[in-house]
Image 1 (cartoon, rainbow, N blue to C red):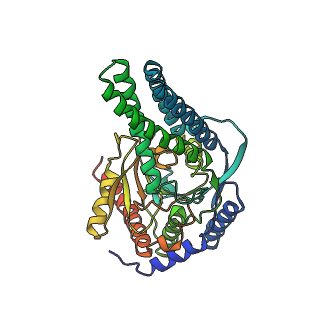
Image 2 (cartoon, rainbow, N blue to C red):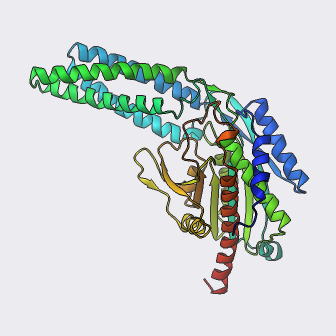
Length: 408
């Protein structure tokens, strides 16, 4: 029931008002916090502002990985040229261990508290259900989240560009070919075979060395307006709150928490802090649902799998319910796999076993660059996401009411 056609213009206007660089720790971040807080106050609410601490350690980990990769590929190039295949084989195995450790560190970045400590803020609007207010019971909770910070990269568009993907693929192949070359050289197979693999290994390693240098130089910058990522999500959240206020929606069973989280782009620190601070409270509820808006562009997608090999599947009744709502409303929603989950707000909630649906955009070639501007937004898609979440909230409230009426 696409009954709120005018909402697309309202959401789009909020996106335009938030379309400026909002890097964590910058003036833009503070301006975004004031903007969101002021919007909620004008609606007549008293938002909760909670400070949290974070460390800018992701840049140190990235630099460390880049330097180690540069050293590894340079040594491998030398060893392959000198026919030192046994040493090359051993170093290749050590590099795999390094890569695994780097992934573990990046996926648990909030646990590594080194470097200078900084502070940011989470902004939350809460509304308890009728039954909670009447009987002091906690039956169901819906958390709707979007981050307000943005980030840029020194090399515009390089973060998710086709160039980067190509270089990473070549780097991966160069590692595999180097491993094979070391192995067949160690086995002393036919010299022609060794020579062919050596040539390909050297070419691949040269590209890998260049890639490592680019990664080392590709610093964070306060350059991206972050329109898609994630002024879009904040605009939808504010619109949802306003729609529920104007419609005088009072849920019977479901408590609501609308979270505007900070420091997402450097490790999802805000979402993790929010979860840690409230975990004991969340566990008092019978059902907890998390709807995360990672970003919205010209298309709508939900994250179905995450992880480098896609072995982590998000499959739960909440996600299926939203897919069904999209089918009913004839809203096209893709299901995608996100390889890197370092800066994903949904990850800490998934690890706690909460049902979650994370909205994102499959159009990522321009993110973290100056190209993430207003022309990358489809205002009808913004409205569609708002509509899906709005109807999902009502549906979940009816669902828990039906379960209680049936004695479940």
